[in-house]
Length: 115
Image 1 (tube, helix red, strand yellow):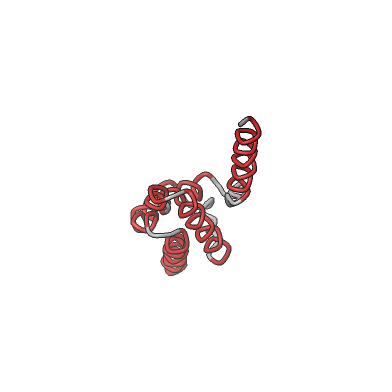
Image 2 (cartoon, rainbow, N blue to C red):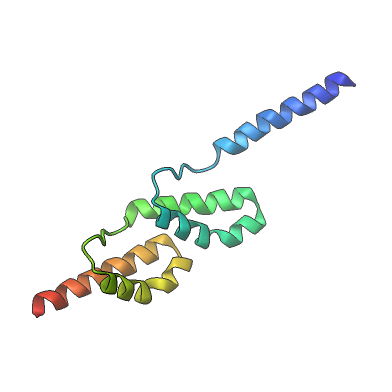
């Protein structure tokens, strides 16, 4: 009996390690990127940890193809305007959100150079 219990505990420890290893690495994400990923993957969390981790990995992969644009030169008012326009996409996906922000930044640069 004790060997059975010991084998069971060992399998849990090994299985737990394997599950932890399958979690995507989010250490390179900014706070805002993490918030967007968590928002997008919220429903997958209810299904299972595997579904959540798969969703997170898809968002990280999408982020590589659609990097977060630099908004450091925007005024608070300009940043607020961009957020208002792109808020919806924070719940759709990080690629869609970053594409929206990129488009808004390009539009604001065009209007600034026209003035």
